[in-house]
Image 1 (spheres, one colour):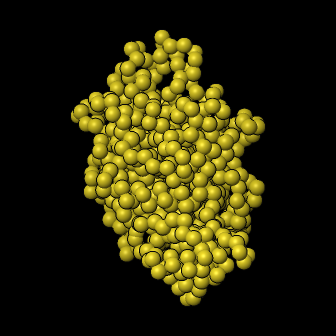
Image 2 (cartoon, helix red, strand yellow):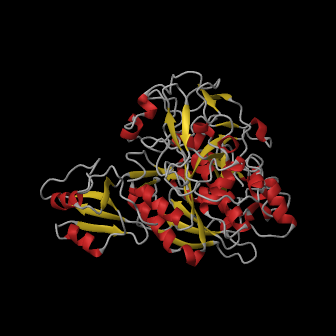
Length: 567
C-alpha cells in the first residue's frame, strides 16, 4: 500500500479598522457587560479604530484598571476596568466597541471521494511532488499531540509541528483531544498503517507534508475565551514569515452577540485575512435547534459569521465511496448570520464520523473510549484492543480542516495566490449534487427525523471539490467577501454582493463568477418549490436586527454531536 493511502471511512484524509457610521462620535457604549461597582473591576475586550498606543493603555491604568494583554497585529486590548476606566473608554472617540470576554468552545465534530481528493492525490503521487511541504497551517485549538507519529516527517522522523505555544496556561499538549484530531484531518500523514505489512485501511490527511503551528487556546474541557483565541491569531500573524503560515484553522466558536464590524474576535480574523492568511472557520453544530422556530436557520457562530473568512458546514458521506448519495448532516449550523445577515456557510465538507489522529491521554479519549477504533480494523495481525493512534469525532469542526487542507494544496500550486482567490476558486468549483430535499433519520441521542434543504444557507456554494478547484486556472480579481442577504416583502431573498464596500468584488462580475454559477439556481428562491412559503422567512426571528439567537448564550459545543454524529 503506498504511503498516505486514504480511505473514505475516515477524514483524509490588518489592517486599520474604520469607525462605523452608526457609532456615536463620543465613543462606544459597553454592551453585554456587568458594569463594575466602585472598588470592583470588569473584564473587557476593547476594539480600537487603530492599533492602541501606550497612551491609550495608560488611560486605563491611570484609573486603576489593569492590562491583561495587548496584541501586536490586532487593534484590540484585554483589560480589567474600574467604573472610572470604563466610563473613560466609553467617552474615547478612538474606541469602536467594548465587549465581554466571551467563552469559546471547540466544535467536536471525512474526506476522500466526497471532496474529490483522490485525483489530486494521484496526480501529486505520479509527479513525485510533496503535499504542501514547507507551507504552514496554524491549528488554533486545544493543542496538537506531538507524540502521535502521524505528525512526523517519514524521511527524517522529525516532527512537522514546528512551533507550539499555550495561551490558556499549563502545557502545550492536547489535554482535550480536539486539536490533534483537527490537525490530523488537515495535515496528518499516516505513518502508522504505512509501516504495517498488509494494512487494510489508512488514515492520512490532506496536506500531508505541511508545517503545523500548534497554538493552544482551548483547555482540557475544550473551552477558551475570545482573548485566548485573539492571542493565538495575533501570534499566528507574528509568526507568518518565520513559518510561512498561510492558513489558520478555527474549529471553534460561540454565539453572535454583536455585528462582526465591532466584534473583537471578528476583527482579529480579518486582520489575519488582510495579512495574507486564509482563515477557515467551523459553522457550528446547532442546526437541529428549533427552539425559536427557525428550523436551525440563523445559528451560525462567531467567528464564522465574518464575511471575509471561509465558513464550513458539515455533510455526511454515508460511509461509502460515492458522493452522489451524500447528504447534509442534521446538526450543521445554517445561515443567515444573526444581526448582519451574511450568507453562510460558504462551503460544506464531510464531517460525520471522521476517523483521525487522537491525543491518547486526552479527556475525550478517556471519557469516550468507544470512539477509538480496534487495531485489527487496519492491522490484520492486530488484536481487538483499541488503537492508541486513531479516534472518531463528528461535526463542523471536522469539516473545516478538510477545507483548510484544500486551501494548502491551492497555495502549494501557486504561492502567490491570495486568500480571496483561494476562497473564490473553492466556492466556484464546489459540487452541488445534493438532493433538493433530504429526509434524515437519527437514533442518538433520541430517535428523530429532520428535513434539510440544498439552499444557500445550508450548503453555501456546495461541497468542496479539491480536484476541480486545482484544475481551475482562472484567477479572480477582487474581494470574495460573502454577500449579505435581504428578505423582501414579496417573500424573496436577494443578495448584496458587495457586503463590505470593497472597491471590486469577485461575485457577479461575469459569467465565471456570476451568482448562478457560484451558488446555483437557489440564490433567489421565493418562488422556488423549496421556499414557496414564508413559514420561516416571513418573520423577524431570522431577519430582525436583534435576532433571539444573537441574544442567547447556549453552549456552542454539543458533545452528543461530537461523539455520535448523525448515527
